[in-house]
Image (cartoon, rainbow, N blue to C red):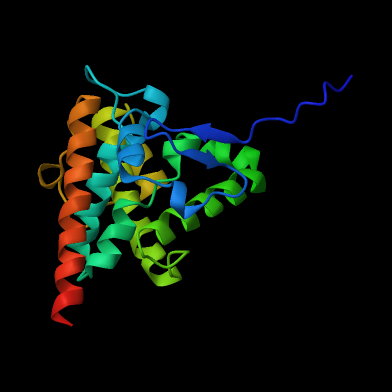
Length: 205
């Protein structure tokens, strides 16, 4: 029997914002909420080595680092790489096999959140396909090292699922799991550095 009360489709953030999951507004997106949330979402469902979870915030920093090493990229492109998993501050990190089971509903929510986040920070609503492909390659490289260093995959398994990295080595990326507060700080600091570069580019042009 219906109670007449509609299901809640929003989340209250620590900033005080109420983010509507079905129709998210860029005005309700705050970097502080993204950094805080991503630093507390575990990659690999938490099945990683170390005293701390390997967070999505730290993964995002690794992907952006690899992306810069693999490409001549603009500040806008670097920001898109840093924010490539930003919707997970709301919906969490779902491992790829489960995403395949869930299907389109998850992707639709994720895409709406991505658009709101991008518009909030002056980026295209959706990442252009060519940039998305390059970020995906960096993401696969990050996943290879996370899988082999932290998540117990053999080298053969990792090569099968993620490919063999070219030109990137373990020593180039900060992959040792960090406390949430440190991952949050570093994510926010990298965001601020990219924003400063974007502002400088705008001023010069």
